Length: 164
Image (cartoon, rainbow, N blue to C red; front, side, top):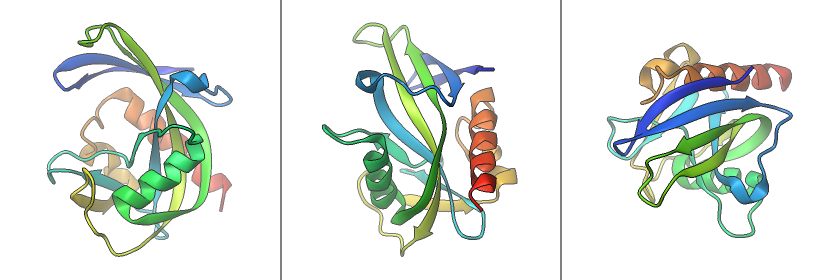
């Protein structure tokens, strides 16, 4: 059953609805790819530009990229990590009715990824990386109190268990 929450992004309300597999968003509407990345010790990797607000690694697709290619590129750019295993537990639909360019709807692919971490070198918009136990994920993630955060974490941990 889909989980829906309301987030405030850049001062605007956005409705987020978690959609489980086997749903795959229409390619033209799949705008971003994010992942719950776990290190070898099981901790979850989060990123930040300021050290105050923490997010899942990920970002926008570049022209011609598959979602898996976007995942690998963003994980390398943002956390200096290589994806060694991955699973697609679902996606999220985002509706922003008051977006300045008019109503905007898009989908974000949500992956679980086991990552091999390399020494961290801040680049792009990411200045910090932290590793947290899954039990602290919702407390550290900026939008962790939204119901979709718990659903995303649970789907990712289930995917990790099935890939052990």
